[in-house]
Length: 190
Picture 1 (cartoon, helix red, strand yellow):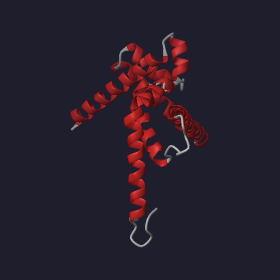
Picture 2 (cartoon, helix red, strand yellow; picture 1 turned 180 degrees about the vertical axis):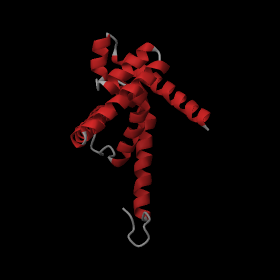
Picture 3 (cartoon, rainbow, N blue to C red; picture 1 turned 135 degrees about the vertical axis):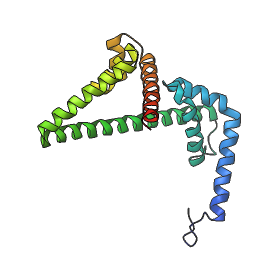
Picture 4 (cartoon, one colour; picture 1 turned 30 degrees about the vertical axis):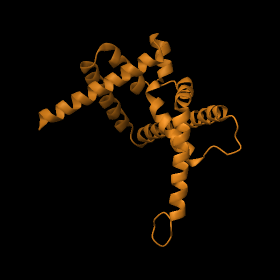
């Protein structure tokens, strides 16, 4: 795709990319409402709909609709569905990798020096007491269960008799409050 001599796109490649972008834009002009409806149907976290919508445009540029396709709406439905499945799989794999890494780090730390593990546990308790002092009760509980106990949003929702959306909202509000508190604390320290 790059011209080896100059490190820039060749004229033919630029023309092909412009053509693919134009075709994707035409599809989006004609079918954007359908595409958005499909995404809304498949995406649980509605705050991610616009991201998936934009990512699908890029996906359509990379893989244009084949010329032999007769039922474009059916093709778009399948393509969006596959993209959403891929996004979920990537997110799950990323979350699993992070969780495995965190577990390995915790295990390594405890094996290296038990006293270090004890100090870390005490620091974590102190941090959660600080959080509880600056957040409303529900938000503090959700933060403690998520980050202290490692519960998933689904498990917390079941345990607290709430829906997952409420749990996500509590987490979001708690993060926002903590960021604000931290920035004010840093501002006060200066």
